[in-house]
Amino acid sequence: MTFRNRVIHLMGTVISLQIDHEKPNDILDSLEVKLKEYEHRFSANDETSELMKINQNAGIQSITVDPELFELIAIGKKHSMASDSLLNIAIGPLVQSWRIGFSDAKVPSELEIKEKLSLIDPGNICLNSENKTVYLNKKGMKIDLGCLAKGYIADCLLHDLKKLGVKSALLNLGGNIVTLGPSPKATFWRIGIQHPDLERNQSLEVLKVEDESVVTSGIYERHLEKQGKSYHHILDPNTGYPVESEILSLTIVSKKSVDGEIWTTRLFGKTEQEILLELNRQPGVEGYIVTKHGCSYSNGLKNKLMITKKEGILS
Image 1 (spheres, rainbow, N blue to C red):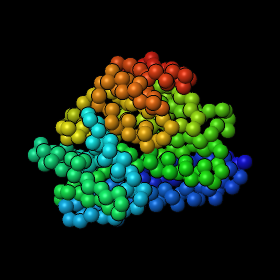
Image 2 (spheres, rainbow, N blue to C red):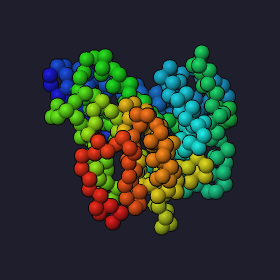
Image 3 (cartoon, one colour):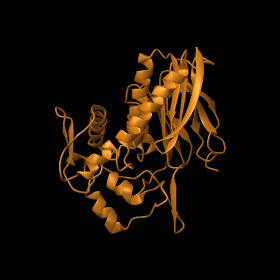
């Protein structure tokens, strides 16, 4: 077998694909083609994407979509409608108002935020599972799958790799990581949890994982600085403003990457105690929390931790 790595710039991020296979370049070529298809399907920033066609027809007509896009929207709606969930795939109007992470980012007026809040009820996303159609009840509504798409795409790519007979792989979609089989250098993969006070690739902890996904959401990456105040990119669908929380980052370890996306988003903004309580109730989902005061993790994560470098956090 031959281990190969390829770096691709897509989806507004850096994607790293590492696979072990006798014909690695052919496999990597096929993954790159699939990634470009997915970018066109799920993007909320490409005016020509399949998702944007739904948004452009909000309040006008239903749109027949690809089964994968329909499936992800259905997953997103289910978790958006869950009690006390901070995940909301209808949050597109708010995201586009703030535009944090883009060159035209701004702080919207209170009036604009109030207007956008009236457009983000996920109950107004109408799905027809038989015909695979999506209809947004109100003009101005926008679905944004940014909180789920990379995880869903990573799971799809992993499924393809298994069918092609790949036994060892690591896919890193801009920090959303999935692993297949053992690492070529060990029986497990070593995945670092970013230290929020240090530069990129400086780990607070290192996890050992195999056939699992690692997904992290944090407020230290993308910011908007205006009039002496800093605004991060994780928005609260209840207020329309960035989430106010003691949490700096939340890392989820799970079998499916989309589950990591779901739970980092559903839980981010809750208290450390609330997050731990929920994680310890969810089978197959473990989490590591970094707060302004320290770190904690769910019951099942202890045997996955390799090193601890907590000193200096929050310096």
